[in-house]
Length: 188
Ligand code: AP5
Image (cartoon, rainbow, N blue to C red; front, side, top):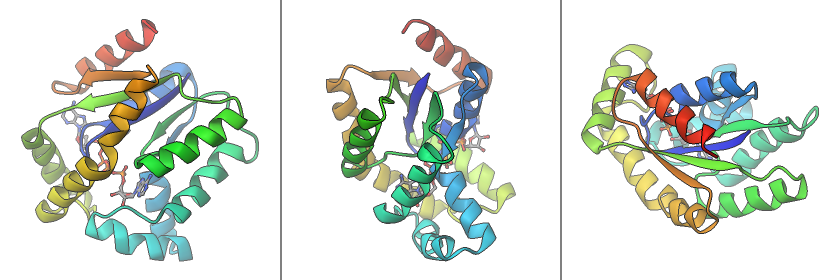
């Protein structure tokens, strides 16, 4: 199973990505989590990435390629994966396709979690009160949503044209959304 999670900030990519990975016994590879680990460890990459993440902007592509290629190639390519947070721009999608094609690892499905703005704001503001994630402040959340709409939404057409886009209604309880995803994946 090779799945890409797409969706606005707070749509549930991480929450659902972990569950899909468990069910299909493949790694959950989240660029957001990998970046936050670099920030926590105080690496050079993490220090540069933090400036962009705290503003709610995307981290420069070159840093993303460095961390993602590391995961997909070393020590050996995983049989399958749930990719969460990469690719999220058209140039990243084109590179991802070239690399995946080369390794015979192209996506089986791209799951897009659909959810209205007010629910995203509610979920992320609530998490921001507890988690201390620097990008879960109201103004930064709004900016992250704008960045998603400008840079990531165009990927939906890209994957729709390739016939692998699956849209999931992501409103409702976590278990309910998981069931919709499993039903959709079982139909593939
Ligand atoms: P990333 O970590 O990918 O953040 P994001 O896309 O903003 O997504 P979130 O993690 O906020 O939300 P999610 O959709 O995973 O939802 P979650 O399951 O957490 O990226 C962070 C930053 O890293 C980016 O802004 C960028 O700077 C950088 N970056 C990452 N990848 C990059 C790339 N490829 N290129 C450039 N830069 C990159 O759920 C959210 C909350 O809602 C949680 O509290 C959860 O418990 C709750 N929740 C989930 N589902 C439900 C439900 N059904 N009902 C109620 N609550 C729910």
